[in-house]
Each structure stands twice: as C-alpha cells, then as structure tokens.
Length: 113
Length: 114
Image 1: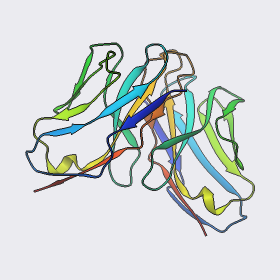
Image 2: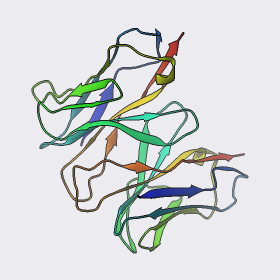
Image 3: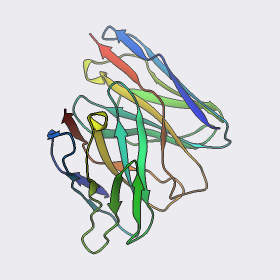
Image 4: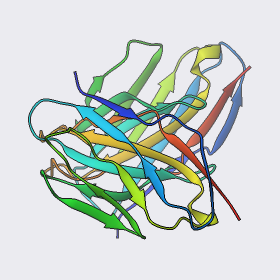
C-alpha cells in the first residue's frame, strides 16, 4: 500500500535559519503530493501541493518540488520565523475519485527567537 | 466560500459511555467526507470515508461507526468507548470530482476517555 516517510523530529531552529524537512513516499501510479501544517490545538491546513512530477509548490516562503525519480517531496524555507512553529505533515493522494490520503507521522518544528 | 465545522471541540467521557461527534460542511455539494484520528505525537489515521449519502467505508476495524444522514453531515459514533479511543478526531472534506484536490479540515475534537 501507499506510505509516506517523514524526517523524524522534533526540529529546533533559530529564527532566520534554513529549514529542510525530508519526505519520501511509496505509491503506485502518479499521486498528488501535499504539505499540511497544524498549529497548536487546531486542525490541519494546506500549506502547498504539487500534482505532477517536477511541479514546485510554494506558499508563505515554503517550497517543495515533486521528484518522481527519488520519490521525494522535501519541504524547504530559506528563513524561518517564530510564527512557523507548528507540526508539518507530508501527504499523498492517489488520483482516484475516493482519493484516500496517506499522511506521514508529522514533524514538529520549533523556532526560537 | 466553503466552511467546515465539527463539535464538540473537547469531550471527556468515561469508559463504556457512548460517543457522538458531528461534522457539517457548508458552501459545497456532494463532498467526499473523512474522519481521521490523530493520537498524541503521531500521524493521522483514516477511520472512515464517504463519497455520498449513506455510503460509508471503514478503514480500520474498531468499535467506532460513522453515518452520513445528509449530503453535508458526517457523524462519528460509538456505543461504548474504550480507553484507546482517546485522541484528536478530525473531520475533513474534499471536492468529489477532483482526485488531485486537497483536504479541508475542521477544527478537531479532542476526546479523553477516562
């Protein structure tokens, strides 16, 4: 079955540091790939997505590129802020109507001033 | 615009008591609906999904059940809660005809079973 493996956390960075959270996946066909973010006590919200190979998703300074050859979708940000502290989830969704998403275990990011 | 609401936000229940969590979606028709559970410090586990009224698919055998009595209403239930049912429950929806679309999540319901 489908699976998503995320870099284990927690990750602690200083403000303005560079962020990378690794994500690799296993799936048949050509799934869509997503990064979701969860702030404390809240539900998840979409951060960015890519629907085909070599697509780059971007939002709020975060970027991730769909790499089919390495089955990866690593999340990056050049300069993190304290407000970026949250849990980040990598996910995939197969291109079927039911589209059941598979999530990684999440990576907790703490940014210190 | 579309919105999703779920309630209650927080629930403390004794072992063996019943459970009902409700989720409604506004501003869209015929959405795919999902119930996920998030255990402390872990990822999301898909419990149920529905592609239409009365159509429920279960992903994990357990003492929970789901129902979809109306197009935009999704209910998670249990007749007798177990300690292991504690967790953060998330309802989500997606556009039914866009297989590449993202999930839209509710605010979550935190259940503690004592």
